[in-house]
Length: 566
Image 1 (cartoon, rainbow, N blue to C red):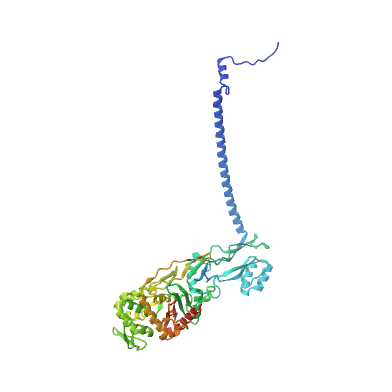
Image 2: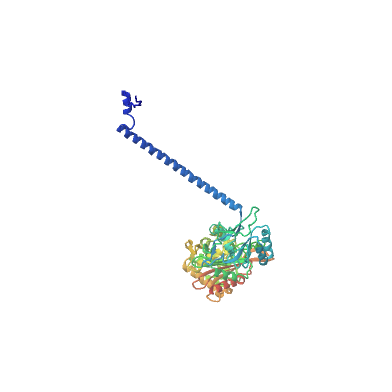
């Protein structure tokens, strides 16, 4: 017999049904299975894609955090392993009106010095004793030093730089420019007013690598950060350095005082000088000096005297009073039972001759006839009694202007006002506005000292206030004629320039003070140059002077002659 195992098919119906419905055996069932499997595969792929996308994002974020953390740690480690010395802090340049630098005019050598034997030997030969001692104190501690040099010095361990002198020898208009504090910020003047524009956050530095003991590693050159700055950016002033030089030279014989030169037709200040001066590079020498050298006398208010008389003349002419109005000067005039005096008995006077001879009694009478309101309003229209801001923190003193009620109710106060005495106080800058209006066409131009911002060597002009008319052209011309006569043959003859003529007015203003047994007076000369088609107004103050003619007229002449030579 043969043993065979035979495969048997299911015989019952249930078996047949099971066989019949086995997956893949039926077409419809097979199609449904394929769709289900395809869906599952798509779902698996999408799930895997999302997983990998999230994982990638987490990885990138982790790497960024790691990089940032690593950068911070690296920077911290670098700071711990280095020592930084500041070479200089660049500062924007202050220019004159012609874009000639008033600061950063010159340079000198400055060196960062590592503690090497060669550097120490070189410094011993190059530095004066006091500077050498300070440098050696650091170098002997294995710390770098910074020194200023008159000449370049070359040796291992010495890194040379050329840095700007902020002011340097012969600095001009120092009271207007101001000075810096110990942190390099502006402490006064333009430096303070425009500190945000001029200050530089990032200094020029040398970074040395050090060991664990804080000693500079030998043979490793320092890393240089920052720049020494450039001349291209900063602020331009209306100051003309040539006119400023002329003015300062003419003022050099005065002990204390001020001078302002203003351009006719614009109100731009072309020169501003105050004495005594100071060195912005060496403030310590001036801290204990006499006569308060840090005060800008060009912006300070003083008794003015007869240089105020053109204001009274303008008020009278604008009120309809004729320049031919006559008055006989007998040497004094009684007002409310009080005698008001003149320098002499001038005899018959008109407005022009009264200006020429500076006749007080004529102006007493003129003010009384004109009336308090007219003379007060003229003074107000010229900015008198009001502080005038030139820049943030820089303003001319308001001085003192008697109130209208006082002038109207007290004839004696009006008489004093007529000759610039009494409670009247004005600054040299304020007086410039009066003479500038007279010198051209009767328009008031507010004084300005800022020409504009400088970017990459190009000027962006500042806005200039619009002028306002305070007197007619005819009134201005009449007063000019009288002031020219003052210089030609009157009290201001000592101020006559060598050429071109001029118009002006002297004053010897009483202060009421006594010094060393003598009365203290403020000497003045205010005028314009040249006589025909004036270009400049010049106001000179001699603090505690002899007289306007003796103290200030020669200074006025010197400035005029200097202007003629430009």
